Length: 225
Image 1 (cartoon, helix red, strand yellow):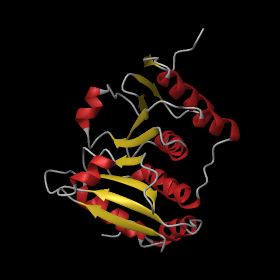
Image 2 (cartoon, one colour):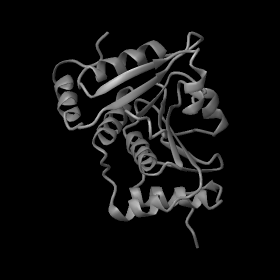
Image 3 (spheres, helix red, strand yellow):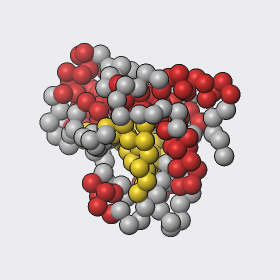
């Protein structure tokens, strides 16, 4: 089944033409119960077919070593990385359908060019993060505000190896939604205990992530006094 047709395919091909270096989609699937593994794999193969520098590497249930290296514990999942697999923190759990296709496309272009849209000041703050950071952005395909939250997290992960950032499709992983009290999206959870909601400007987003890194928990959207 083709996901992209006509003008949509042309627009995606044009955007991907910016890519200048080889990148890989490490796709993790399972033969066990999986809501959209088949569809996710097909979508990734279709997108990769639009640019010669994008490849898809499929890993099944037997590739435990690879899954462990990239922290994959649920399916479907994929990681976007360079050919040498240096970057390990740009992860997707669930199919990037609907509005979330924007997140996939943005991550591919940014990884494939080595450039992000973040400001110099933001990049400096991200570079100063020395502790492990795990960002989980809960989304749904119908949420127009979710890609912004996902893309900021992914760009942070591209710039600092201490950061891992996940897109998590909330409908595919309802148990995680319950665990993290996801009542609306985007909901961004940082290091398990801190969270904020909505699509924030990059400066506020990074500031709240740093607050979580410094040990603050609970609602990170609360104003500091």
